[in-house]
Image (cartoon, rainbow, N blue to C red; front, side, top):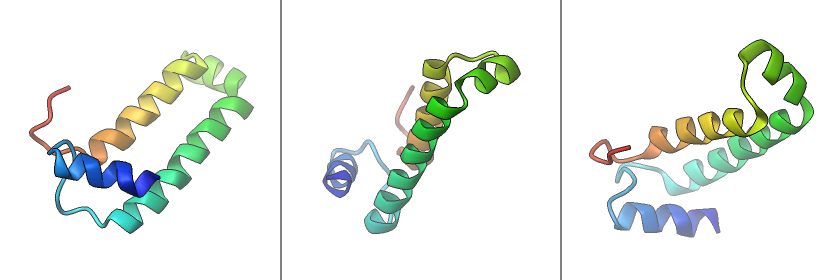
Length: 76
């Protein structure tokens, strides 16, 4: 599933063409799982130490992940 989404992103120009789809797919799965687990289990810590809600923390993490694989020509 993740691989097909990544391939589609490369084909339509949203993602970089130099990506190793298998490695990126596995890495994305791990990073997304980790972010979601952290947000769920450390919600109070995130709020107190960073001043972010769980949703804001996740949005920040998802943006970091996306922009690490996005084609540099893609605008925010």
